[in-house]
Length: 432
Image (cartoon, rainbow, N blue to C red; front, side, top):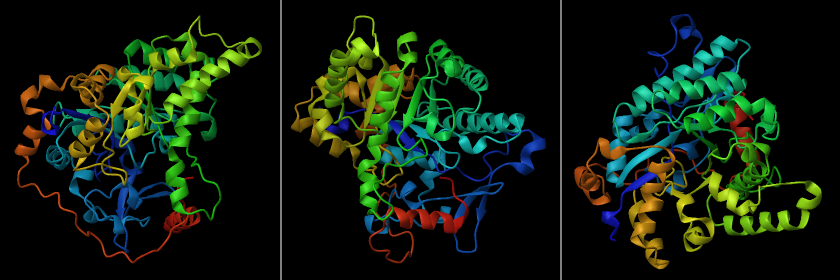
């Protein structure tokens, strides 16, 4: 297979939400209290909700910018690609990058929509439903077959969360973003089976995948406040390793055999060792910890429940059979700083060729697994022959994907995690 022949579906990209998104979906009585995008005197745009101000941190929207401009300053929508916040422009960028479809995580509400948890439960639920309806009907509905719809949760109430999962499932949604560790957000942990039971039941009844994204616990893996930013970026996948262990050993995995969980943006290279480790732990300690997987090894149960996802992970591709070829999906991560856009096809194919990945395996990793796990059927809308890298790029001829300096930010030099915290607080009261 040549890179132009691949069909690419990314299961992890991101939206920079546009102004006016609540206009058509929030009840009139709540409109004046809704989150709003504010243009500040310094030229930055920030989402503001009550006393909370959420900076548009630059690493969230650097597609098309030179690496020298990656940084931590808040920025305005006029400094980022329109594809970050406009679905029609996003599709143009996808075409130019040879990508058929993407699944898009939220930005300003947080991965678990904790921002929307207010003292008024009706208002909180209205915000969640308005966001979901905007995402499903406007963002995804703008270009059928190009976006895998994803819902945000009413995380503060398992019953309401379950009802929302069922509501959006009727609209064709089989994906829910959630936190990798609810305990760090002040909610009961995954081990509190009864607390979360309504949600687990709704997920399996509707065949909806829970997507736990790195960083969604509100905590970052960092060794010290004065550590270089590179330390935090390097350790980001460690959160997802902890989530995988937490969930694999939890009661819901045993009680709900069809429960599906995606480890979003967590990479795959670590998984072979992880599976060896959990099997060894089970062998050596289950007699006194009383873990019971019904005659199966933990590694076998992992492959039944977990989807693993990678952006650029040659080690994971090399060890794909140790992970499970039916459990791997590819991610582009547009418009974040780890993104492969717009050169993903070439980068992916170079890795596939290095490790002699067969055409059948390529198809599973690049699109078939995503279609199966998320019940996504793009070919109802786009003929398969028009969905390849080559065909999409041909349709996007003339679309500008050149790297441009979009801002005049000053050189910050080496940044630390403490710099990040200080910058966020200076903008005002950003969330932990």
